[in-house]
Length: 367
View (cartoon, rainbow, N blue to C red):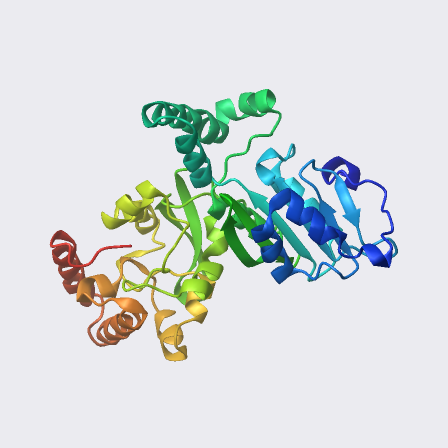
């Protein structure tokens, strides 16, 4: 696909030096002071190589008449992008050099709901929101209705969560710099960190597999019931680096979780499919947590070495011992592994029944 088919570029026009502040004026007039402040914190608008796309979706101003584009700013919400979003993001990626900046925005599903409830009386808004949710969130995800939906709306009218939008950006080769809610629109800034990922199909269904480190460093796909928005798996490193871990050792303030996902996590229902991994001899019933590469590298060196001696388990030691927080989870695994080496598999029986007792008494909840 060419630039004209995706980004709808007009021929570059050289802007005289005396008009270097033109971008500031355009952004202020089209998006407001708050957006201008956010963009100015990410990009020097007076430098060359800044391409601005207006709300019409066409090029407004290009300060890069003689060199490469260093930054692309799009003031049109990506919900109205008439192409598959991943294809669009890949095209933006290809237009930018390494460390090039892309700034865009969307109307998230939460912002969309707020707009509807502000516009209509509550009783009518609830009906509209229900119909909107079915037609805009469910039908585009189902195999037999996806094509019909895309034909009717011509691939426009994408309804996205901010987690899915940022996850798609990470999947297509960008690293997140920042994001902010301004005037009920979600603005994001990302930097080109590499090429789009290949060889891994993003998860979208109710049941999906997560790549996790197992015995001797082997990567195993662990089954889970979806409790997060699509493409959330590509954001774990970002969420942890930004917010750290909570009291039960999970990413803190995790915006990737859906509302119903929080409920099934409290009940541990999202982890039931891991029994399939047990049946396939990929997991033990009790053992250290199956964690991602990022999570593994965050562990102390001694724990990394010791946990690779055994398969991970569905029920982690911290649930059995009632220990919380990142340090608590780490210490619980140390205690378990020490007992496991000393007493063998028989230890798993003790940890299993202690975990069941804690879960039934709601002493240890997933978050």
